[in-house]
Length: 487
Ligand code: ARG
Image 1 (cartoon, helix red, strand yellow):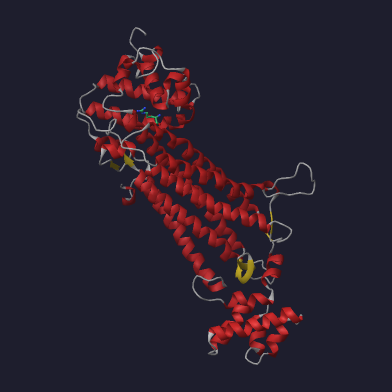
Image 2 (cartoon, helix red, strand yellow; image 1 turned 135 degrees about the vertical axis):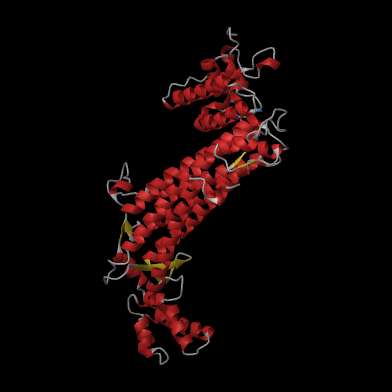
């Protein structure tokens, strides 16, 4: 032991209860320091709020407060400059901070853990970290939404006839009805905006401070968890110390939101894989977002899109693995809960990199209006429009469906162009033929929210409003001005 009694060379912080040091295998198996160091700035911020609380409670004097705050600042500086030395007996980042503060400021460092347990400490630092990551993730999702909206705008001209780019809309991956490319791209944008909404919702429940809950039961010391929560930037504190130290709903929810973003990116990735194939030919990747083959010189591969698709698997694994960890845990803290960090760190990292790469891919990809229009303009894709024409003349839809279906079958069976059969059908005639002209199908589709030019223009306006509303909401949350940030 050092003269000042600092824990530097006496092993684990909890050594007092034990005669002998722990087994090497225990140290290696139970440590989290190798992956929880990224919580250091969050833990320092929350620890500063804690020591200011100790000072207000009269548990440390002015000089001790200054020493502890200075020590915490120094540890953060050492961490940020890459010179913080950690030792195996630190176990986790929380212990490492206390050990290093004590080395730096002397025995007063031993007061930092007054009225606190690692159980409320880790929950506080982790929530603090996740709240910050959610804002960063929301900004990245909004960046991708911006690119999709921009590509939608650019697709409103430059189509084969100078008008909007159109392509087949698919169901069952069979050509169904033509839609504007802008409509298709905005479909992804709306899904991603729901993810931004989910992030805000999840952030509200995450932004609750467990500090002051102690190991599980609170404290006999005169702590003020409301004040420390506010000091650390939390809009609310816990209501129940058992719940505060053992609740990891916020981790499960955050993992679900990350996974949902991953699922959306995966579906987009699959689409890019299809569209850039020779079979579709709907798009060409920019060289900066394509990869080559080590063997086949002609290849241009969509690896970014494939990995966006593939990484959804690990996100689902992060989520389901953690749900299994949580299942059946009795109140309150159990060491199993240390397994909350790696999956969520992995999910946040994965989603961040995937969002950045997919944003770059969509910003640089070239869409090919010619092949898209050629596929969209198949006369069979107008079958629903033909049936709807009959409906406006009073034919029951089921009969109209039968009439047009029979024409399609005859056309395919007998090799007669559909347009000739439509022209010869008295109830369709020239009005029917007009619907088979390239672009007629999308132009006619005017119902709100649908894929024709009018509803797409209206939709674009609403999308712009929603993007602006999300941005305003997140800046208000970050300034702490939004009532939504209250837990
Ligand atoms: N590293 C631990 C975790 O992440 C900190 C809490 C340890 N608490 C305890 N009672 N051993 O959960």
